[in-house]
Length: 49
Image (cartoon, rainbow, N blue to C red; front, side, top):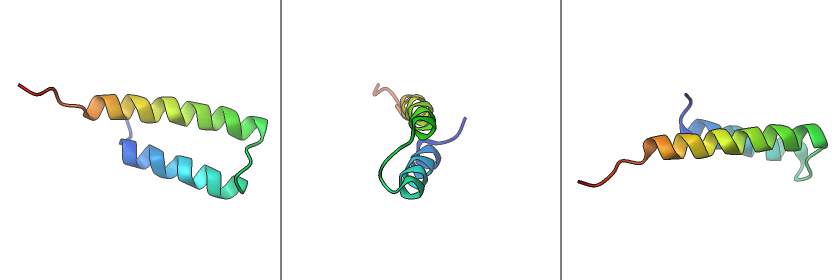
């Protein structure tokens, strides 16, 4: 699993490449990346004792 930071950078790169307007294919890629990012964030959360 990639880190949240890695996935976030890929999301940012996608937005830069698209010029701020996502095509249908880019939107699908974005949605997958957001799900992956959320999973990475949840994996980094450590419960307090």
